[in-house]
Length: 170
Image 1 (cartoon, rainbow, N blue to C red):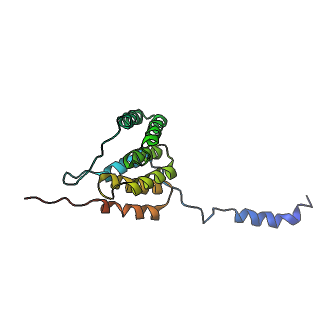
Image 2: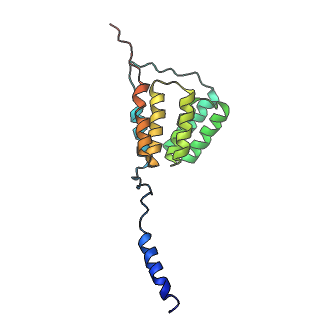
Image 3: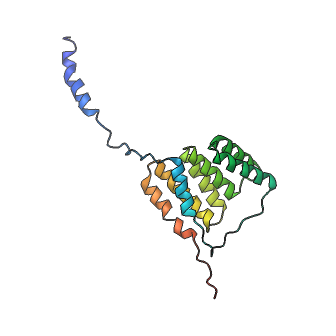
C-alpha cells in the first residue's frame, strides 16, 4: 500500500483528464435508412414540364433491375444488391443502375459506399432532371448519416441546379 501512495496524485490527475473528448464528433441522430431514402425520393420529385430521357435498356439488365426492386420491396437488401451488382457487370456505366445500387447501400447503412456509387453515377449521368436530384440527395443523406452536416449542406445546395425549367408553350 505504501508503494502505491506516491502514485495516488497521478491516478487522481489521470481520472480527471479522462472526461469526454471535446474533439469527438457529436452523436448523429438515429434516422432509419428507409426514412433517408424517402427524403431522397421526395427530393427527386417529378415536374411534368421537365425533360426526362430514359435510355433503351438491355432486357437482361431490366430483368435484374426488376428482381432488385422486388427484393427491395421484400426488405431483402442483400438479394437486391446482388441483382444490381450483376446488372453492373453488364452495364458498368449506367447512372440509373448505379443510383439504384447506391440506394440499396444506403438501406444497408453502408453510407460511404452509397455516396461513392452516387458520385460515380453523377459523373456519368445527366446534370439535370430527377436522377440528378436523386444523386445529390443521396450524397446529402449519406453525409448526414455520417455526421458531416456541413458537407451535407453543400450537397443539398446542388439539388436545385438539377432542375431546368420547362419551356412555356402558349
